[in-house]
Image (cartoon, rainbow over all chains, first blue to last red; front, top):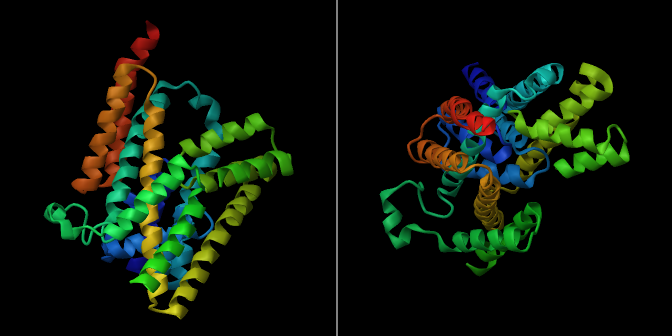
Length: 190
Length: 164
């Protein structure tokens, strides 16, 4: 019962407070699920699977986490909890939209939200890269040691940045290419 | 995903004109929560009221829900496998790259506007990265503080610049 309550609490907050879409939400999800004792390597598995399955990342992630800790009922509850605030807020805003237009408070709020979103997206890298690009957590004294870095994933990460920013390849294709590359390198070569 | 919704709603179904679709997307991206659910709620509500909003939200959520359940069942069936593990390492590394590329794109959009606003934005972005990523401050708290500081900045600085 406690698990269900926590799932509702975490994902309702994600739906209500997360500005800027899927990636900016990841820190809120990461901090929320820490009550279940989830490790950062489990977390990056969730992000990876959510990224390559169809649909909004937040929905994928809430279904995954709900299923992991509360079975099928947990998956349904977590998914509903993340959607409900979006749904309600949108309905309220459609009714009141004319009152918000040109409001200094609303303009000011977004002046603050936009840069915070960028900070949150960048901190998502710290949460996802742990155990992937480096052997343990990213924030660690061991960053000074050369053995602490996983060089093959760092190469894959650099290659995917080039594909996306310089060659404008769509992210989903980059994910599939790098999945194939990873399977080949770790399954066949090593 | 957003371009797909846009072309479905404007060209295929002709539910709204291009301009309303752009307004709808801007609104969906500004509000908190899952952007696709925000858009589905808006489009559904415009077509069939609250019932339409409910169905559209279910419609956009269900495939995402089912695809995770199917993927996890498949992965459980395959079990521990070096190819699958390798593929996951590849995806996770690529996701790190994707996140950085997304952040850089947003950073570029911050340039322009007044100098005071640019400085404010850079400080806010760096401050929230440090707070959440390094010191583990609750992200929701950082968002709320960001909103308050944004309103203060706007009222004290930006609106005066506009007045000049």
